[in-house]
Length: 230
Image 1: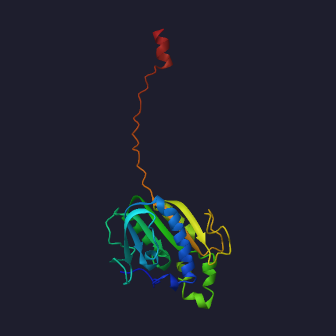
Image 2: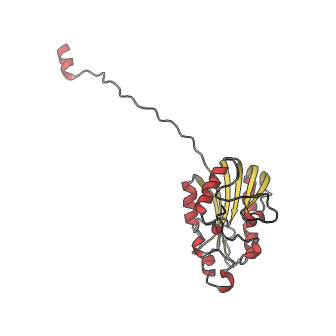
């Protein structure tokens, strides 16, 4: 069962889509050299249009949730047709924004990623200019519903609960008029930012077994016994 709403068929379908895609690609190019492995999964058309060629990941597979040109696999992001721990990296470009069950998408992504695998995702900021753009008639139909946009802080909280460590974050506006946004990471999302980009890594820390402490018999003699011996 497909749990995704209408997914854009390309970046041109989004307001300032080509500009945003270019800025996101710059972030991916900066982060890609640190990524390595065998299999990268790209979900839906927006992810497929982005590249991680500068990484050391050998091959990429495109999974679409709706029939589309260039897809390798047709599947649901909440029930991916991949074995647990079989993927080294996953790219979710605005997949959560167009999903009816975004938390289930993240849970499924955690399952199919191997330990220390990478997750790259982008999303619209509902409290920034993307949320305000929903008020403009010309852009309203080209953006996901406001209630489906997820604030970056909420997404990071979900990732932490699933065992991910957020390593990098960046924010992008609908234009480049605010210098510094697209060149320096921020711990807090600037309020006018339209899009956030996150790089997270699945962590699995080994648990150290705690040995059961057995009660130690008291070998000290009582004061009365000492006085008797004297």
